[in-house]
Each structure stands twice: as structure tokens, then as C-alpha cells.
Length: 165
Image (cartoon, rainbow, N blue to C red; front, side):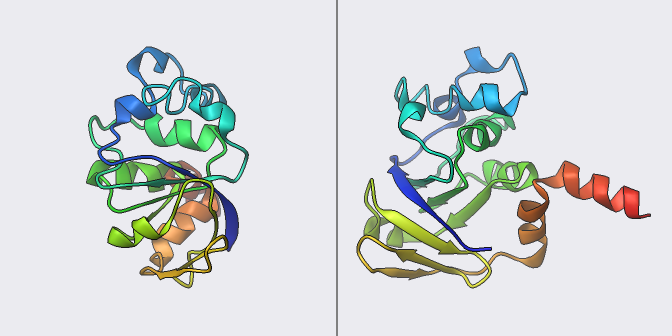
């Protein structure tokens, strides 16, 4: 399913404590966590975000702890996807398990600026920067990863599987 959104660009090595500081980990309520998204990076950052926006990051986004709260806070902030040079592996898996789409694009991340508007076609493996006209080709999501995104994460996927059996 294609979608588009405004870019909020952040740097490299953004860790899970910057995404959602430990002091906010008193809940698993996605909306509540979203209110504090990126609070460890820049207080009030989330007030610039609108539903459907996109985070674009440098290398190793999501490094640090394995807390599931980090992708949940991004989802709760209304972010539909994170596009980055690269991701910390445990964050990558947690994000898909929570229903957050990630796209790894390497050095092509330099073609995207804060405030640009991206159109993302995950099934085709294509990102179009509507602001600059640049087209970025990425490997399409595997059918299983796309299913996790479509179902809203692993818990919803398993729940549906159990109901159908």
C-alpha cells in the first residue's frame, strides 16, 4: 500500500533512550508513549509531527536497549514509516513486530532533506521524493514483513491466525 508524508530528519546513532526516555516507560499505551516520542533527542519534537509523517535517519537508528516502547512511541506519534541509512538489528525486528515499517536505503539517505515529502511504495521497493523528484530504489519488503505491517504487528497477526484455526 503506497503512502506519503512529510520528512522529519534526524541524525545517526539515535538510540532508544532518545526515541523514548526511560522516565516515560511507565505505560504501554501507544498514544501516551507517542506524546513523548523523541523527547530524549529534542524536547517537544513530537509537536511538529502530523499523522502520516515519516522519520528519515542516518546510520544505526534505534541502537541501545531492546525496548519495544521505542517503535510503539513512533507509531503513537503518528509516524507511518522510518527510512534510514541503517537500523540496529533488534530495533529493526521490534519495529516490524509492533507494526512499524522500516526501509533501509544506505547512502541514498543523503538525497532526502528535512521537510521533503516522500511517496513510499513498499511493495515495489520505491521511494519518490516529491520535493526533489529523486527516485530511490530499495528491496521490496518480504511478503511476511508486509503482512506484519498490514496486520498492525505480530500480536494482531498471531491473533488472526489463531481465530482462523
